[in-house]
Image (cartoon, rainbow, N blue to C red; front, side):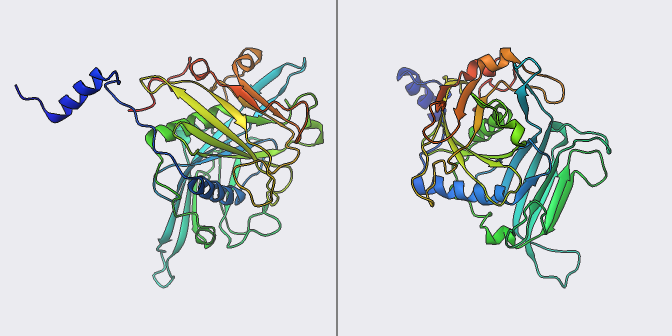
Length: 355
């Protein structure tokens, strides 16, 4: 009896002890490819601004090609309650960002220009009434060069989480897209598995100045954070960069982290670790932390239902926790394990990440 060729492959794999649905987690990347994507996402987040103190912007690439990004803005309310115990609550604004090398206009006499389209993902966002405050307000500046006041963009597209006509989508042309080289992919190793991991990281990874140990810096004013996610050099490794911004997006300090994931034979996340990368020794280095005194804690928490659920000590006891005060501080905690099976146990997100 003759068998189809793909049946023979399955039989051979089963004899070798390999799972029938063999999983693939991408190919290794070169240091140059990782650094290229780090710099590209760094340039993009530098053009973005959230008009809410204490907020966190999370951003990642959303396709193997170039010019497609996805992100999340969170109110990111992490801190101690009245008794000093840690709590977490938040509202979210989810979005897609599409960049095109050129697009036409209503006026046929206008030359084609690079164009950006920013769209709110309503099903994944907490939408609020028109006059509710505070609210989430995200802007992307398309001006050729970011000036001295990026808090007030000169050529912006903008969305909010308010139920106001026109607040859920915006687009316009701008040469900044091409000038900052935001269209060309640094590599093509972005899989469906990676995209689902990025989405999970966006719901679980949170920086906090208010839970810094031993002393919080909340009294000095709430910082905004911008974070980017991208592939690490090896399969099942992912980079997280956090950029603390106190008043202006102009001076961006980078705090760099590496996550290593462990999966079972069905592609489910089981464990891993998160660690802070070393401090830079030169001003032009990539893949390192260039903020001398980050003054932040980083948590990998169980996901919550934003706008509805509130987390407390029970959830924080399950979280991975890093603590970065300054380079050489005795209070630094630079590595921790992540129990993904436990963090995602009450969700629908870990039933095999690979189709």
